[in-house]
Image (cartoon, rainbow, N blue to C red; front, side, top):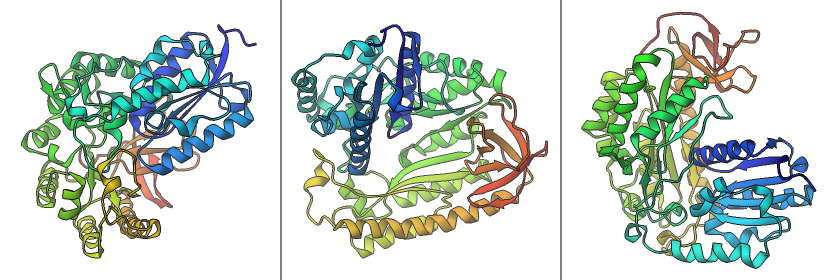
Length: 457
């Protein structure tokens, strides 16, 4: 038996940036306990599966991987946690699984030794999950507001770390299972967010992604999300202006109000890049989804963004094939995609999630039809992305942040995927680097080092 003070572990993270952040916190905790990480599950004493439940496919992927690792590492302790562990716990009653820890109890792993999970009975492991699942089906708005989970990190496995500032969601979009798995919104105190950002910068990271489940619902220390962003910029910019940058993860379209636009313009560390949770361009579909914004307002906000960011990246999440979605509504989303200066998008076909209102709606489309609706949007997005890369290649210069994986790939401030020319030396550590674009190669802007005037911020 492996000594509990020296063990090998493997972590597989499915899903969002917030899940990646939480896995990093657990990684650091286990390393402090004497654990050594391995990239080979078959060599691990403990395997952590951080699952996702946003789509049925995400649950299936985690389940399939868990079953595979149970065969490959028959003596390992497999711990399944995350959103799928809350939404579909019985799917992970598999050989080799020692514990199934629901998302709301994931933070308890920060106070436990993974080797102590040995020997729990199956019924004990599953009982807490069933109780948690029953509790989670209540309206999250009516629950007691939870404390912010005590995850924190000192560094990040990837070059561009995530800074988690918010968790959960108190708005029940009809398609979304996240309020059932992560509970109501809770926010990180501003001072803690600033302190962690400083730690990450001191550790050598130069691009930080500010992330949460629903940043619109951030409220702590008397500040909303824009107040937090202004504070981060105010405290970090004097030392890090020109040497580091902040990037925002997904925003709700309604956040692009006057305060939001003024904050984006005022915060010099923020990358000229936005990612919006649009979901649909059809007013009728948005109503069925429980979404609260109009396309006209989004178009107006994007036009105003150009006043201070002449060049910027714009991404979106789009959900196609929602129950009852007809050809006219599909075309409305295609029209929205065409009208917005989108540079990329994450496009998903709708899948039924247990416990959501959409799962019981009439007019559920066949899977093939949902996939076809999504494919049409992806094709249009691909055209816009290609045009964006061509536009980026014509800029006089921009700032490159490497992926930190030993290769020559990375992104610029506009979130355009970039690649340094073969033979170009990488900057030391994670330093930002001025580069000059020289063309497009596949799905990347090809660049070479050079200090040139930059276009935009």
